[in-house]
Length: 250
Image: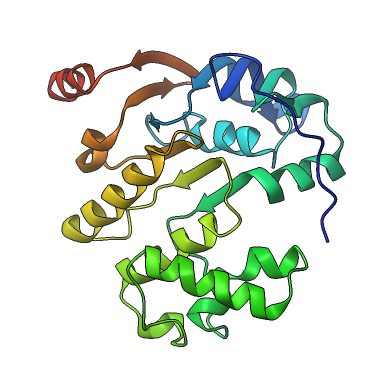
């Protein structure tokens, strides 16, 4: 069973408060700067999109927010926790208790049934198999897959597999949901269905959702948008009108 982190309140208006974060990779002679004194913020109850060209630092910033990378400089505060000051063990517990991930390629385990895939986070946390199954079945009903619980991932369509991935990401009720290109492997109609579901999840007042995407078709689902280039946030768009106007201006 995972050891619980001490409960802490959110210390500001922001659920995510990233200040002056820098990150570089490689030896000093061939250093590549991924983030350059970057600031980023997101609030509860909204879907925040992070967009920009390939190599601009989006994935690095996402990894720092999730606690899978530590910054070279700067402060990373998520729900009041100072991730930049945490030990590796505490970061692992933080992710297990607070973060859900949705990926481009679904990352389902083909030898496990649908409900077993969804239940993986609870199994890792040490819950009894019966409770894992019951909660997985409930979550699959929520994402529209009632009756498909005992099937295997390869028998499902891409959209159905992404629904399984969403159920898995939500099964432990994380307040932070991180989505890395959740629609790029899907057709337009299926991608729209998935984004409608993610947008509804983001409306929950105790949840913060961050989506990294290159897919301009889904920009309309954002409540706010941060545009990145060369390791920095260049522009913040805070309304759907601003996002639409910026999209037509590109």
